[in-house]
Length: 428
Image (cartoon, rainbow, N blue to C red; front, side):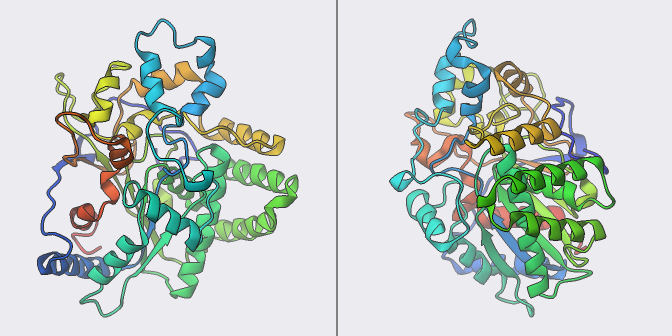
């Protein structure tokens, strides 16, 4: 999306992204418990510090006790249970892999589901039950912090942010301004200003939250921004249980309009496995990089596109032959069920009209069949993380259909090296 995106949705363009895309093969390098690994991470930390990175914030996507593929929305409005998928042989088998009840992914202990709270108990539950699969754990964030700060004079602050993980428009819209509120607090606490950078690394659906943030931080006023705040303020007025949401949102809106949210610091964003959905406003962020688990398998020369033959990919998904299937399939038209309350449903519908022009099974199928890997804006690294299974398949709880390798400790050095080389090699 261009500067002045105004909350427009991304297009599903099959055109060659050209120089914006690069291709990599994952190499583990030295093990995390080795001195060589520590030395290399320390060198990369020095590069980050020289580039002005003062804070690194990690946000996981969505997994535990949630509808990872967003298939429930397809059932809810697409009429699948009424037979819309008939006439497409094999589609029901594919949908069984997408639905929460039959995709083989772990349910939360005690039935805990989104919205999640950003507190120690929930983070501990995530870490205990799913470990590093689609999750930045406390241990991995602490490992990163210690490694990158070995030689720097001003330590880089490394934090973890757990968003609500509500996979619908209202949940993401609320998460966007709440994240901005936290970033504003971080800037104040760390006394950040001109020349300082915040690097946010986000996994999966959390990337949509940052796309909204980029539109909110874009300079100047826009009709989309006005509509966004109007919808949320109306929702909070009618929902007393949301507490101080209306007052806090009003204060943040004022700071956004004055361009003073981050006190002059720049927000850089790296997404991992984020499906192509909400558009980005490049004037609202500094550097933007998208990393996608991708295996070149096409025979038509279009290596930047996913191998996408729906529903024939059903057989290969458990083997993770083609890379990240969540990134491929959780596109426009997919979502978790809309909020239960009438107020929430009304707000979600209003946000859908602002943010996403597609809905329903047929439109989802149209978008998914485009096979788009790279978003319209920012740089894109298409990485073969070498997580395919040659026989027998793997446990979906471990590989999350190709959505899990980004957040593993074994990928930390590789990811950090690619981020530094792609975004900060010049030190600017």
